[in-house]
Image 1: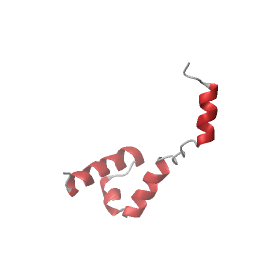
Image 2: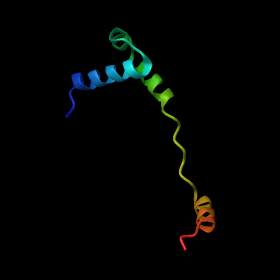
Image 3: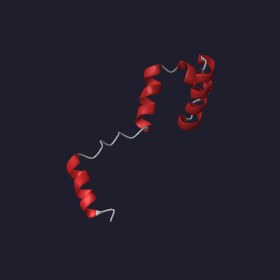
Length: 64
């Protein structure tokens, strides 16, 4: 089980490494500010292929 202090220390380190934040900048930031930056770094998920796409791929690349 991760404690709040352990999680905060890890997040502060990541914010420093990724965003260049100093410790005081991390602690002054709101959760929304941190979440906004993190979400900007994560690409949008690609939806899985539909059945027609899978069928076309199976036809183009048969397993033999």
